[in-house]
Amino acid sequence: MSPSPLLPPLLRQRLWASIVLPCLLVLGVLSWELAGRSGPSYVDGVVDSRLAHHFGRHPRLFEAVVQLGDPGSVVLASVALAGLCMAFRARRAALLSLFGPISAAALTEWVLKPLIDRRLSGGLAFPSGHTTGACAVAVVLVLLLLPGAALRRRLPGFVRVLLWYVAALLSGGVGVGVVVLRYHYATDVVGGVAVAVVVTGVLAWMLDRHADQRRPVADPG
Image 1: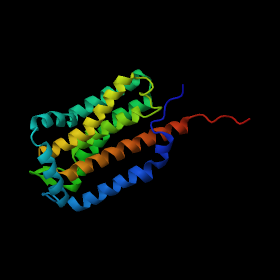
Image 2: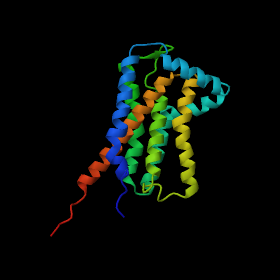
Image 3: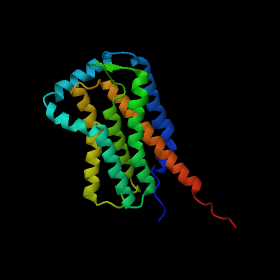
Image 4: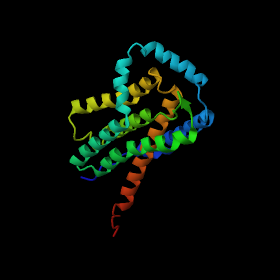
């Protein structure tokens, strides 16, 4: 059985134009607008207040959920996913699982945050590191569970459903939580999602392309 590609053919064809470039555009515009700022934007004022109104009664719940985006949790999830992929001999998926979320989180914390220098309560805020890490793990999970993907063909149905819920919790719960708890503004969360999608998507594309280049070409004669 040949190794499964990380990106389905249609997604691979449209990745750059439909996903990567729009995310980069959003990230670029927000970075330009928020660089050096320390207060909420108009969008933040509207969105943050509504999230606080609807979800602010459950701070302890969100404190627990937000911990899923901690650096240690992201590393642990990445290693666990990579180990699961290796158990099924899905090496390409293991590389994406290990390096996708960790690379995205590192880019946010060590490059983008100091460069953009947006602050909340004195700390660097844009993009949200918790959102970046959690969303990157979620994106990897989604890619591994798409039809024809490495894990989908090998995991029982109830496990796949559970992992879909985990992906939803990571991508949505952590993002909402950091806003409700006032760790970040809503635009910080949007920036974190954009970084996560770009880094994991481009890494998946690169791994698939590298595998294609290494595949032996059939002799026509």
